[in-house]
Length: 430
Picture 1 (tube, rainbow, N blue to C red):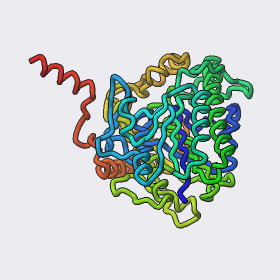
Picture 2 (picture 1 turned 90 degrees about the vertical axis):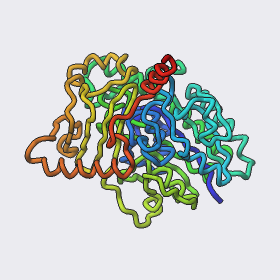
Picture 3 (picture 1 turned 135 degrees about the horizontal axis):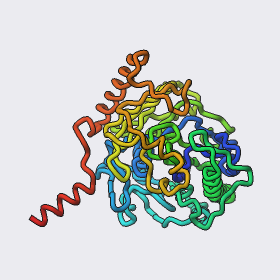
Picture 4 (picture 1 turned 60 degrees about the horizontal axis):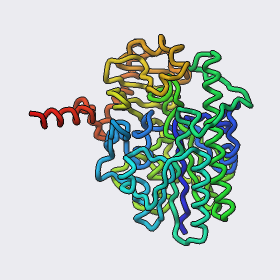
């Protein structure tokens, strides 16, 4: 019998949870999920912003190949190619009832059913969304048909008081090493922790509902975030704080239990092939990811030695591609710009002006970092004679990945949706 699947996503969390060592974060429900299930210590997204990241997570294909070059909402309106298949498509075709509560951020509300959902329920603050999903689970308990329930939380996206959530500094507010050590930054962390506490409580509601309906044993619960924290030098960058993600799993009936910790590097594009293999479903040949199901079963598994990530657009043309190995990070910047693009929501933070001098310097064409000696990625080794052979080898590896995944940047710039709309308007007027 196939398991039910509860797939929980959230915005902008990175790995900022107690179970990942953030001691001032109050996240008891997610910490308990890690303690009873599996925690992936080094999970990485493939794009450091929402829609492209989610597109890769749910299709198993990189954003530059599946069409999601930037954000899905107005006025950007990037879309998956018509032949792309969301995880919900695969599961519905094999007999699952599919439901979405909250955000999906891959298309507009009217087109959301095209992603493969049988039911869609609107976004709401965490407490309301958690309750709505829990109530829905009660209606499915006596149904023989397996279900795929996707719950997309807005939290902890800025603004952090969504749903009238209060800051949380009951355990303190430890500052992250890449942020300025200032009272403003500390207040930001407290606000962030309040949003995380609201998210955590809602996840706790869902887990409690599964337990109350006797569904927990045979439900595969997956919790994952889209990308790193909404802080300068994190979200929208290819530095580790931008691409590191929380990934937790719990499925007692499938052996995903016991508080295990998975140290291997995992990419978001690996999730869909893993689910498909675990369920005995055919793997489409176009997928870019690789299944880590054998790893979870204690079988032979070739450990990843590299993860890839990229960004083409966020709100503007910001092309970059990168890779991360066990020891090094390489970033190729395909546009002259400031060192760190900061999204508009982060620009409203009081931390932003405190970092502006460092992040507004000129961006180099290539960045190379020794992650063991320089984990904060501050000392760019690109262009230095002792590291030229490594730089060339990593650039070659990046090129082969771009070529193998059909990256359009190898052929030239990608036109923005704004360019397409403007040219269409121009042609209509002439």
